[in-house]
Image (cartoon, rainbow, N blue to C red; front, side, top):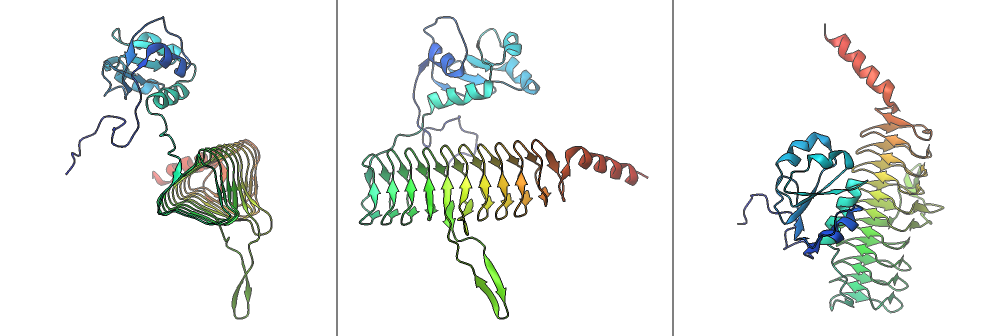
Length: 342
């Protein structure tokens, strides 16, 4: 059996690695400046595990003691922590440490390149169009009329339905199903995502329920990431729309005709009922529930496990069930604590 001890960051069995990289290139990726140097580094690591050949980072003063004790060869820090970097390490000062770290980590661990070609077990039906630069994995099915753009990776057991279009540089994980949908460029779907299935639409009759045809589509903008086992229903009359730059976590449910603006963030196990509109830059916490036909204003923040039953003003911050302004929620909690002390 493999050891259960913590492995070094970026285990080579799972993550591609490049390098070593010189200090000047690393600083450029981090958005920082360093003196001219021919020093090179071999990898990235957290402060406590880093060695002299590693680059690390710190952007939270609560962990400054780890910075004092680190053996890292270089550390990405904000300007106010420059003087706390140990004498044996090089300070790379960045205006945005999180962004700098993301780019440096990507420098050492780039996304694996696409391997153009169609696996011998994949099925590409007549009438489907697959760009020659795309990679089609084992047992994937690309149905007639579907279009796969340049430099896409379609993972094993993926199902791409008739008429679906996928833009360039997409990454579609294993066991994803896509139907009645158009995807933009650089879209990432993690394993098990379900895009374009029939929405939850029916009407009651005297003898049971009568399903209502779901005749819309799903439109996903550029640079969207959708987590594992997330489901996005196609529209019933219009389209379900996921705006450019959105990030959806694992196990999110998006109902029919929902519209997300640009760069919305939806955290795990949240559910958004049909025809609700989220304007740009809305954040929805884990396990939150939004009922249908609402409008959530630009920049609003919905706390975890909140239950939203009415429209939300731009920039509002809500918590609780039914959802209410965060300040009111915490005042109620404080009052309840005082009442129960006796």
